[in-house]
Length: 329
Image 1 (tube, helix red, strand yellow):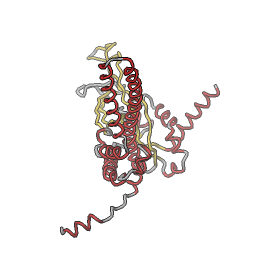
Image 2 (cartoon, helix red, strand yellow):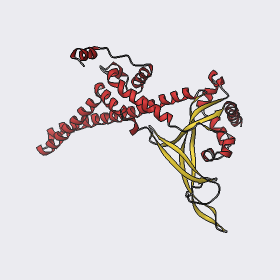
Image 3 (cartoon, helix red, strand yellow):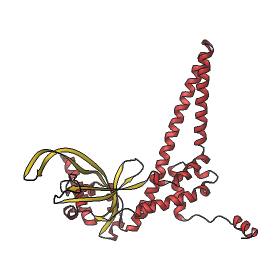
Image 4 (tube, helix red, strand yellow):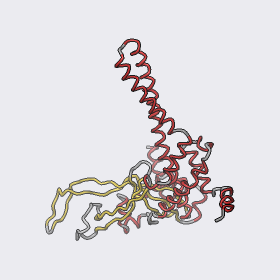
């Protein structure tokens, strides 16, 4: 390549970011720090890291298994759905109490199809109990058992169009990444406030010492004051907008450190009792699902679900009726 071509390429204007990047930059400013939008280099510095993070979020959403049917029939026939709920009625309760489902069913979009999709999430739990178990020809009681169950079942981003639902989930994944970064900033700001308070106390204490004490205590106090001042300067520098942009750019290039899926395989019987895969018992199944680690660091089973619209409408009405009856009583 000639020198002239190299100079010409260098002088070419940077192509404008596409709509997804623009939306991502807007989300950065809203979630992380509004002042970043007006910092020189905001768009240029974050464009590539944001593109990388968006690609990672798309891959993460694409890796979610499903969609699986979630209804009474699936509870009876699908071992995974059976393990996810204690009873078939709990499926109705989840649908009826979900604000996301209520909002979706109240919108005209819900009539595009007789079913809709959503991300299903739940927390895996285990508990120890003493139960009955057949061992050979004998039935023993008070046998230690470990039982699998799930809590906090919820549906996220319901939509009749599965690709639109996935697009919404990608946006939520990016928002989760940015909220994690924002939480880190809040910790730094809180620490800085604490340092400011400690610095003020130490200065007042040193003033008292200078009026009443000898040199050694003053020297120790002065050294401590200098250390606090240096810490405060470092934190102030780290929280400056230009440094925040650099830190955010580095953070967005490694999203897999804070947002990721982990495969899980657990063998259980029909009652949810955890078994060894080598057990020769009938009615045992190995459940395979991913768990999502996100902003709150808690693990959630995550997969796509397919819901019948009419069943969801009936569940919402049933729960609403139950709530009215409770209020009347």
